[in-house]
Amino acid sequence: MTDLEREPRVPWGIAEVMGASMLPTLRQGDQVLVHYGAQLRPGDVAVLRHPLQQDLLIVKRLIERREDVGWWVLGDSLAENALDSRVFGTVPDELVLGRVRGRYRPVEAGRRRTVGVVLGWLCQSVRLVLSDRDVSKRLRAR
Image 1 (cartoon, rainbow, N blue to C red):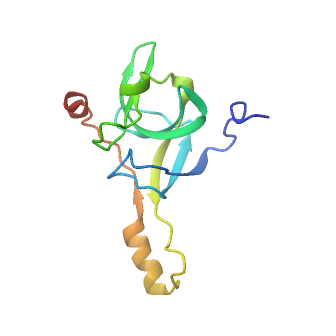
Image 2: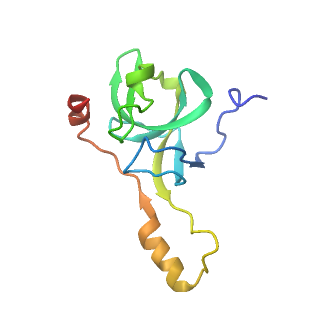
């Protein structure tokens, strides 16, 4: 079975962020908690299949649902070279897999895991990923 034929059989999963397109919300190496099949709204951060390379999963913010076409998605980074809907257009609904609910940054390798280190890690590295309901400003800014 290929990756394209495999669909999530469980409602939750973990994915790793690669790249800087979602800065400052998500950083390279962040682990995200994905809620597959969740109801999606503009402003949500979602995991989706790249429309031009469907074996590649990407994380973007859903900006606007375009009738009968799909989602317009953008990275949170202001970088001009970001790969998002400005490059590949709208993303069909069937390629949007799930909503990102939270993220955590792994504990640094080699670091002792004392109670203080773990509590500090929990306070600094585990966060909910919230929706940005004022996405209209993003459309105007781009």
